[in-house]
Length: 364
Image 1: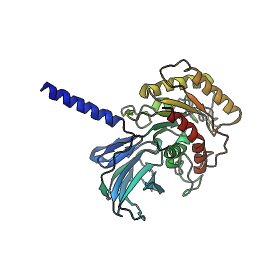
Image 2: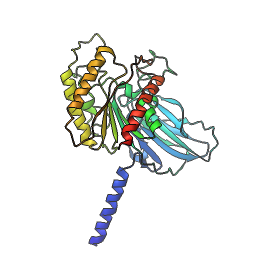
Image 3: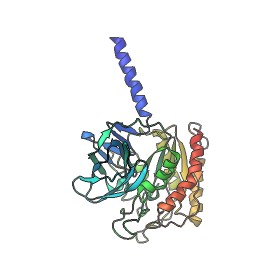
């Protein structure tokens, strides 16, 4: 009896270890990726930018049931058989059925639904599909990247293909599928998680001195990237590489109306150092890369880079972790909404990062 109990324990332990090493998580026929919450009935809430649910099916008939969990619209991007097929607007209200047009004649198909908007816009509920589901292959174990940042990392304002810049709501042009992180991750064939919130910074936000709003270090450990600590993020996703792109909002002047203090280098550097320690707490074996911003130039970028180098210097005697590296984007005049990168700009950013990230991942 003692032997059987211990054997069962060992088998459960092996099973849990194998599960924890998967890059994506599978529940019945769904494969999940990113910051998500699984509900009863196998329903899934897509929370973070570019979080996703995927499944395989046969035949030419497929509809998906989607709902915005908040009192306004949300967006998802669709990928069918590895090809991007567009973005859906999900209006507020009850879950609605969305037909998927399938033109290619194949025995089976693979559909992925990515949240195009961000955590700050509320969740998107995936309530099921009418498709004739088939068993999905077990996801390959791939290298993994986490991308921490602000609006640039979210894909803010990069897609004005249906709603022109300056019209609609501030998130109507979001398309995280085409943000630089997902683009480079697909190119490198790695799994990824985006932990990003528009307007947030390392010690203050775009238009707040950390008086009324939280900052990224305040929300990072919470599943919904907000102040709700009752639902902590589980950090099962163990990234080989973590990139941090924060500072654009810390260095900004805000809206020019609300009182704005001078940029505090000491506070920025101190918060950054402490935040890296938080990342290490949850991912002790990761490699960290600090990024500057394509939206910061001139003297501000000089200050930006100086601060990032100070952060790295604080860890120069850290023998417990891999060396922190620094990447500087080439100067850019963003062509998206609100002086943000558009889809073409995001690809340019991704193209700059791909060889740099590939080299670091190959060193693992």
